Image (cartoon, rainbow, N blue to C red; front, side, top):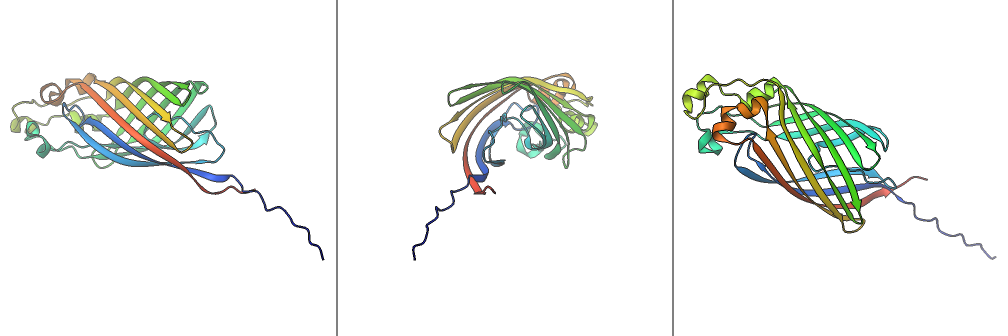
Length: 254
């Protein structure tokens, strides 16, 4: 009895794409420092197969979009704030330690010119080192040339009183312990303004590399802190690089 052979079902597109990234960053040892430290850390991102890879500036907080479309998005964000410890630098001897902090919060971004100009804002709340609000505003011009994505634009950081007092304040006891500083209590407001830029090269569908740099100028109460004026600098530079690998997870449902 002759049987009819049926073609095997076509393989379905993968349902999710996971991107694993290795990052290295050179940045000030603490807010207002004139010395630098090097850190390396991993990061992950996940998106549905068939959707375009979204733009993320290297200095964005770690984000998870919960709402939005190709023109806007909003969701959760988090950052890490390095601490300042008197034992790390002889210039800091006698000053109170400012512990590290994690900063969970919310973000929103909007593309007034689709895939070209992005506005982004973050509002976060510090835990551990300080307890208060901080925020970031950024604007990026994004230009795609072949396998390159080049981006950059202005930055602004805003900090509440608790953050400013923790990282830029000087207590009376600090001033007694360290003759290089005087007692000082900063106010909430704009902490810094600056610029950031990045270039990404996509080698193929799986591999990409990025280099980035940024400059922030401490202003207002942060710049007036004796810690910055006498022990550090208002000029804050960052340099970074990353390599990412994207691979599929599972199969999409019919």
